[in-house]
Image 1 (cartoon, rainbow, N blue to C red):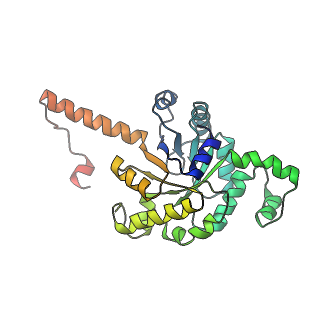
Image 2 (cartoon, rainbow, N blue to C red):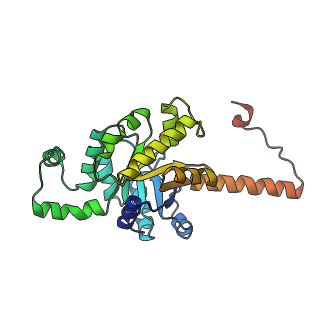
Length: 271
């Protein structure tokens, strides 16, 4: 998979499957590379990854044909350009709520290396010289811009946000969105499902990919696809490890006839 093919699939409705990678282990790409993913998601908003380590991860996964989508820590355009310089195939912008943010991030991702007043003038409507436009076109075609839509204000502003013609996908953050809607972590609530369908439908009607990052079951993911999603970030490496380890240890204890007499954890006793 290449970024260009990924962009084409998002726009035409092809379903792309990825997962969140939290481990910076150099052994991990070898393990992940044969799992059948279309892309990987690397999150620097909530996970402590320094720039050098991020760059090694991005360039390694890209070499394996897995375009790395990097969520930057905030809505600073300079963060986006740095992530792309470090090897990201695309940038995920957290908690996007306004068309102004979308425009600024488009400038940072699709118009590199334009900066400063020249970029500002262009984003306000100033045309580009033909040679410059030709020079910048591959940048737009080979870079992905994904906006996190995870609040009620973002949904209200979504038509204006999507009027920006070069956004490649929107991505729901279920935790933040349910909190913004007043139903925290209630992922089966009709209000959340209606909001997700509205986001997916508006995006797909404009030829923009529509995604969600969630740790739900296969059946629940299938329901989101039925609602219009075509970009799925399924769980995370650490979740698969935890689920597998807990399941295997439980089965092993049962098979060996030994009980679980470990001290109770804080989470088990309501602390």
